[in-house]
Image 1 (cartoon, rainbow, N blue to C red):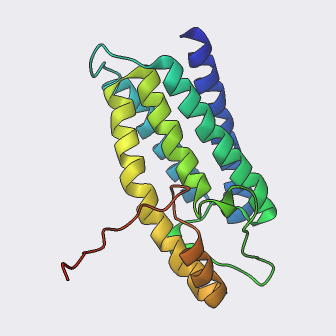
Image 2 (cartoon, helix red, strand yellow; image 1 turned 30 degrees about the vertical axis):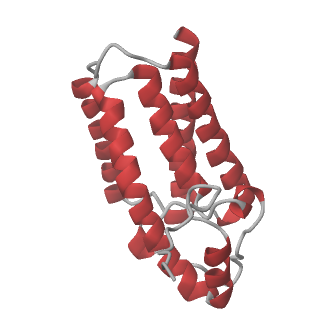
Length: 190
């Protein structure tokens, strides 16, 4: 359990530092309101973890959770590398794409349209399986609800920018799962 704890906390701090660095570089984090939002958000995250760090039950799946967690970290990292300089941290209402942006279909983007969000969902699910606490359950639930909503907002921006190329990509590549779930087709009795 100590190794799992070390891996989780080192990667969370590293991801947070990367997020702040990219936000600073792409969004002009120098404004005081950005720092207030960042500190307040981080404080709420820590506070909720402290309040909700109570066991849901006595069952844990530390090994499976660590594998899922690391798969999430790997997926998120590979997706960010595939995006290169195009990855940025923006609110959906501020998302802007310029002419240098291209539609990335390599790396994990050849299997799913939103590998960063898939990776984050895996991270939260893995953390829940490792720690089995209310805090992890709440954040996993928020990720499963919030990230698909954010993905839909981003897809609107991408469709406006890339048009037909984006619609073709959306038809060919599933959003989060690297396979298509077959839809039920009504069979007629003729």
